Amino acid sequence: MELCRRLKKDPHTAAIPVLLVSGIRKEEASLREGFQRALTITSRFLSAAKSLLVKVARLIERHRVERRYRDIVEQAADIIYTRDTDGFIRSINEAGARSLAARLLN
Image (cartoon, rainbow, N blue to C red; front, side, top):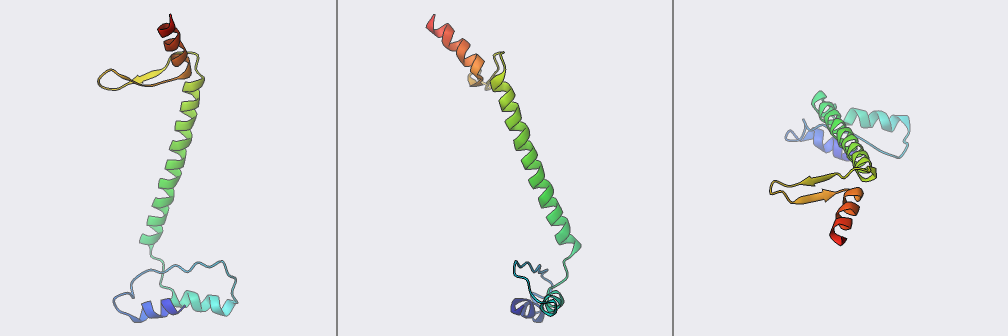
């Protein structure tokens, strides 16, 4: 509460949005005082928060899809590999590794 009071009094920090978050349950009077002291959450802040959540959700989904794709590639009976621009093999699935090992041993 004291931080909010100081921020509101200082003209250099009066426009900074403040979000009060607490895991401690307080009486209603304290909550009202906190909301009165806190600065209004701007739509710009909410937009940034939504954007952050969207980015996190996309990263989680991308990770899930990539992991699923890797599982499918590893379990495939077909030989699946990738090459770099110089033609060198950079990755190969289990079926490809077995086939390559068998050819090298014969």
